[in-house]
Length: 318
Ligand code: NAD
Ligand code: AKB
Image (cartoon, rainbow, N blue to C red; front, top):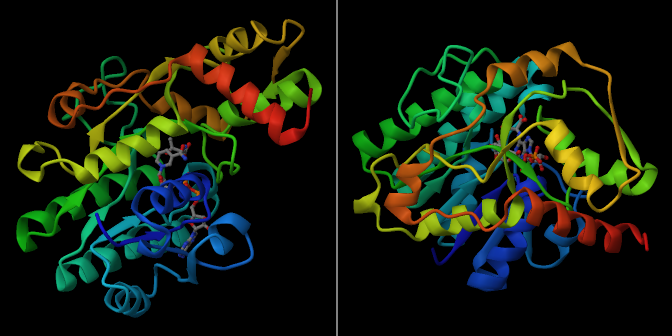
């Protein structure tokens, strides 16, 4: 990776990935883009930034060509909860956006990294130690777009030799940008509410177990996979990766070790509850560990400690 174009750079992952890529590869070698400007100060002002809609293939081609881009990191997407409210827009952004990136890569030789998700699985997938290759019958439009995206990337790799890569992310926890409307967002909101109000009302039941990961590990996964030897990748477009498998109760107990008075209550949202119940409890990520040495640094306790510390600084709470 020498010259990188990031789509959807103003989002939860893009905010931190853009900063990390600028630091790692040089400010002038990272082109951050998002559908519109005016939503993220650091992404837009600390380096090169353009407004770019991933539905506009000509615009992607123009920027990739004029900046001699060799790697497209495609983060522009709608997530699971907002997607159920507007399936048509989700399909346009998630599928046509990816198709446009792959077409440009076919013509220019760029690598394309696109994240998939635990949402690519559904209720008929084995829940525990979910295998790398298994049943994928998701029941959300977001999940359908993720399975279709994995297959589209496989197709462009096999048919046109495009260097496509991707991981199936679990829910991501971070403190810089707010999450973009997913089912796992509770795992971020709980930290803000714990520090502000010592209480959080969760929209998922106490026993819903899902894979989660702290953002520093999510970012290192992108850089490690993109830098890995392509010849060693047995599942290049959709590696299962995970860092922890937790319920809202587990997260609350971890927060209570630092804030003993913190209280968790529940007010279930049936839509997000059904989505969460359809996703795996715990992924098997041994292929990622073997093929490109994936190894997360943060478990639940380390993540909780750092999130509380960083958010105290951000919110100015002593
Ligand atoms: P996000 O919603 O925070 O950010 C997405 C960004 O895309 C936003 O800045 C949005 O403005 C932008 N965008 C929307 N429509 C666009 C368009 N037409 N053209 C260009 N940009 C557009 O999402 P995120 O959490 O940063 O996720 C990035 C990728 O990672 C997505 O593919 C998502 O499915 C995947 N992922 C995220 C998580 C997570 O927990 N955050 C988990 C699994 C997979
Ligand atoms: C969501 O909840 O939609 C995302 C994801 C797991 O893909 N965080």
